Image 1: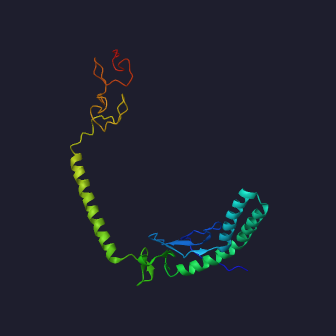
Image 2 (image 1 turned 45 degrees about the vertical axis):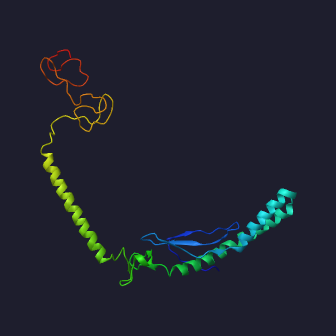
Image 3 (image 1 turned 135 degrees about the vertical axis):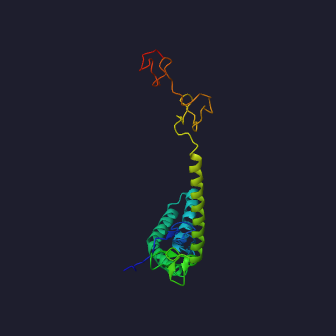
Length: 220
């Protein structure tokens, strides 16, 4: 019966089953700052041997077309595949045990964090128990930024008293489709913007596209 393995999701599997670089290695990372730690590389000898035999079989096949060499390579691959899962689980168990010396588990949020993100005095991570001095400095900066933003807002309100909100403005030129930013003339083509045509007879505003004045009937 296989042994159960308990682990967190803050890891990445770097294992290789096949080839001359076959082996077991796992990367663990801090849940708070994402700094990583990798377990020592453990070679997977069966996978490496299969890789070496596969290279030799390919060379022999290209020279003499030998089926025996291919059979040896296939047998080695099968042996490596049969042993890989068990040896990987054992390597994973050792890696987890080793990683426990590099990470602490917060009892409040259950996250695994590195030593730099751990408040050893309280036995909590710095997310759950932030550093008081750092929080005080950050609060001062937030207060400074909030006050500066409020003063800037107040200054904008003062300037807004002189802004003519009743003047019609077109933000896109109807002639060339350029953005105008509320200008009187289009900065791209010079077209006069936001000008309502009026009847030459009764001076009433004319709707866009009107051929006759809807008030007096004068032809536009």
